[in-house]
Image (cartoon, rainbow, N blue to C red; front, top):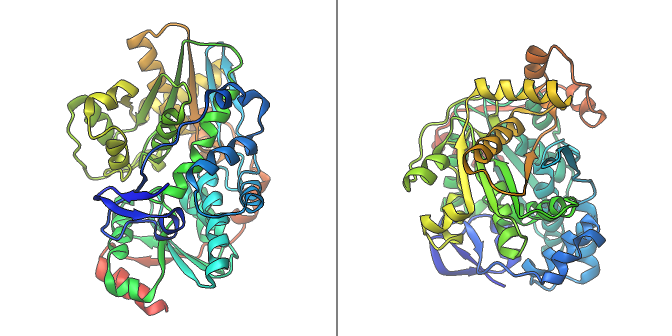
Length: 435
């Protein structure tokens, strides 16, 4: 399999080139030439496969480089070494808990997968690479954790000052060593724009071997497709309609789910759950994609006004809005309603959910009420551990969420970040001064 640029289908890359570049040379995102189809026997046999076995079989279809089977198995075992349980909320609703990785967020799946592959390739290349990553919350800490201490790889994490939670900021600014945190005056979109400009800057690329660990890198999306299969495996009864409600910001998580459906997983519908950064919801309703300035919300990882992965979804459906809306519904929800949903789920089910999962729960309820699907099972993606939003939960539920052991250490460390403006010339000057 080859991978192509969304700007030019004739610009092709191997998997190694795709992951190590992050972005195509013409500034486009990198996509597989086709989505490989899984045999029905594989889907029917999911109950007999471990999570790692599922990941291994899917990976083989996307990674056609000459990687020995035992090496690929080792990569998977090191990357996907934590669970993704489906919590049964009621008879027809489950919550897929994606926060059992080292930084308590779904981003750990993609970051660790990517880190293990890059480590493998760097060893073979006898070279070093520099990673630029923009984060609106959890990506930064997941990438920092995954790449920390890997020889030959330096990571620069750009995050919007004052727009991530205190826990998230502590997680991404306390590693040191080969991890540098850059506190940018501006929004996530400003951070993302700086990264994209650097990738097509000739002077920067003459000095650095750059790649990205954002969901613009295709290696982030492939492993995120794994847990859709793992979730489906855990739905023990048969349903006519299986629906996934996905908290959506930069649209990487949704795109990974669409990959899973295209591979053959029988998902009836996806719901792209937006907060007030509702660019994608507006597109679904109006056929017009129009970016807009980012709005700060309590579901901050979804605070994206120009979602990069839209173009991947657009290409996946041959640029046809009519095909997209057959598979994807979307709605957006306010902070006020998000807080109400957090309180409702805690009162009715004693379930603590973070703001992102609460938005997905609201979107699922809205879809069920309006469309009334028969014999359905809805899956809500819970993308971060509730403790990351303890300040919010404490205020509305009058409780303290217990601190998970995995992040106690980072909370005790001193924040170390370099403050920069969102002006590209100054960011470029900083990068050039580092080498």
